[in-house]
Length: 258
Image (tube, rainbow, N blue to C red; front, side, top):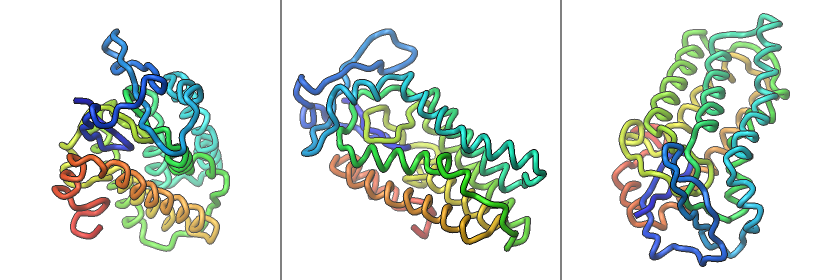
């Protein structure tokens, strides 16, 4: 029994039902602690990324290099905020949540099976690295809410992000891929707690640095995570066990609300 994972949820998959033909298989390491190699199978799609490109993207060093390069604009923005004396608690917590994302991407496990649907890859990349790639568009703005509100949102978002990523360990992923099932910790209460953390930190940042440009940039980023949520669930819910998990854990982002 193998498992399917995306962003933060890992779901068992019956490989007898979903195994791809031998021509679409490529190899990756299942665990950094194991020297054995396992076959990673590409989920069959009507529109697929060529196998040689998947092989390249599936290499550990490529995955880590993308995470580092995409973080450069955000790192530069952090540096300029510090130099200009504009670093506030909400901004610092927002940047900390982003840094945590990069760290977990650098140490995550390689997948055993991935989706070859190019739209999943495009949306996953844009949504995940959007904050990095658009960091230079953010401006100073003005505070429109009490400091304790902004600070509390940022702190709560960072705490949820840490809790969720510790719950996942090294099983985090961005596109549909097999890793290990995780239903405890933060995922006992929400199906997408990492996205919840991102929303809270983004709201705290927006309220502490409000401007039309900032609102548009941050709002679009949150919208991408919403679309990514439904894309992921549409893919994973094809598996009966993930569908059962969705029925058991009703809330996507906020308990009792959504």
